[in-house]
Image 1: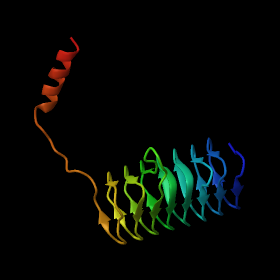
Image 2 (image 1 turned 45 degrees about the vertical axis):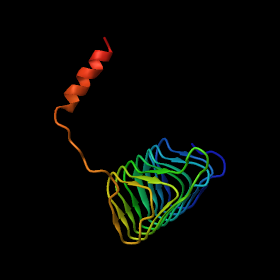
Image 3 (image 1 turned 90 degrees about the vertical axis):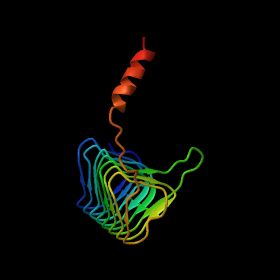
Length: 167
């Protein structure tokens, strides 16, 4: 579906069921299926935006990839960067929108939340499942998640407690 204000260069592939409005797409980009490009989406050359990815007020640098299940809003993604499945940019705090800047050749692991305003340096690697709340330095490996804690038997106790409330 093409809404108003869409500009598409040569050699762009737009796959089925994608929705584009107010977007600029450079040569060689691949979009969809089921992608949504909202106003202010700018895709540089050879960008890949895959299934169930939503882009708003965001520029993706040449060769950047966001192949599945992600939301990128109010941000800039550097050339050659890979955005893992399930990545979201948390750009709204309930009052204001904030920007996120991701450098070139960075890797954002699957199921990562980037809490804006935040920046990720060139070449940085953000581990899968991270919740990033402060800037990531250039070439850093960032792991921002709590350790798994197992409490044996507690699931059974919780079920019993909940069953008691439902009687």
